[in-house]
Length: 496
Picture 1 (cartoon, rainbow, N blue to C red):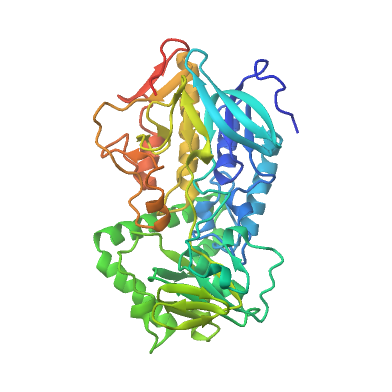
Picture 2: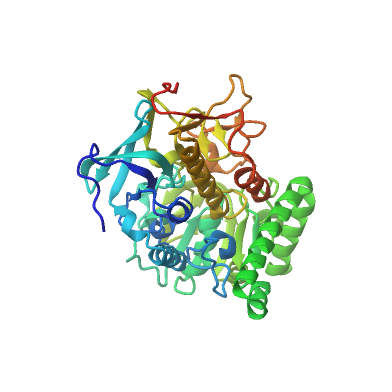
């Protein structure tokens, strides 16, 4: 593996990619194929490929969207299962990096902590912690593919009496691999995707698992295998089948989301009816699986082949909807007065968001935080030159948008080379109307309101959350518009 430049004054890379997860490997592939000859490095703060899919190791971790859209379009997923476990996704990312000779560009244990842009030199100077020692990298373009989760710590509320509980308290983000839960009573606090995934996976080893929630979440069951995809691959050439399966799932997802927005009551009734059918007569679906909010105001949880519902119906798992009064030595006391016995408590209470991998950005000596700054085409920041980031969809597979962003970045780089300019930067007009970046009521979004960028009300500052619109915008529309400026190095100093 090539080593980093010993002296940043001796070598400048064309691009540095931050993060070696799905979006980082996608960007590296696009750069190497669509901008051949560009020098680049992937700086990964951890010691492994995979990002989120390497970090999270709790039982049953799996994709919450189909792999034909979560996977790379240039290396389609062809397994029979459409919903797969985290280890399979991690292996798929690593195999892809190996297949396209991208691993040699990765510097593991390299955490980017600061990035300073110089307009005069048209380059970024990166401050890096390399295996615990300070290092510096220089690059002409910076692409941050670090996701939006805080890898260091998940979110856990303060619970009264926490120190009184006699057993282990575990957050899924830091799951102990030696945790013995065989024959134990487990209470999982939370009802999001993590809790929904965990509960069936803890069985049948656990004696019983209880999902404790303050309020219900939308839960939908779908087959683990995509039978239409299997049939298409059996009868059609692989490339044709891959294309058809991918677009079938993309368009299905868009249709469901649009119908949910336009006819929320109808979609809500259908989802609840599906749960009622899965759990059988007599189950209190109204209390435990009928949310107060509309579908897609928060992300809908997915269970493959009814696994959660089967566990509840068979009596191995149960759902309690109530609020916590305090932890006790033997479990949890609820506000209703009910007590839940527990040997282990799992706080599946959410994640913390962290923008741009926590990198301290500056432009010509001035701070350039993402907080409150307008987002251009959902992937660049107002006034920040030669910079893009991967930020996937909240209503579809993460990789769909990240791949479009990577290809658009390559278009920008090639366009600058053709024009013989060194700087590109989007600039919003003063007074451009602003809105919240994410129209989501989820707790992790609300807690991060003060660190998130903003979006505008119209293109190119509007974040579509729609793959069709983004495909048109990022792949076909001209690169030069009223917001994007192209400049030669040293021509002007950028106002942060």
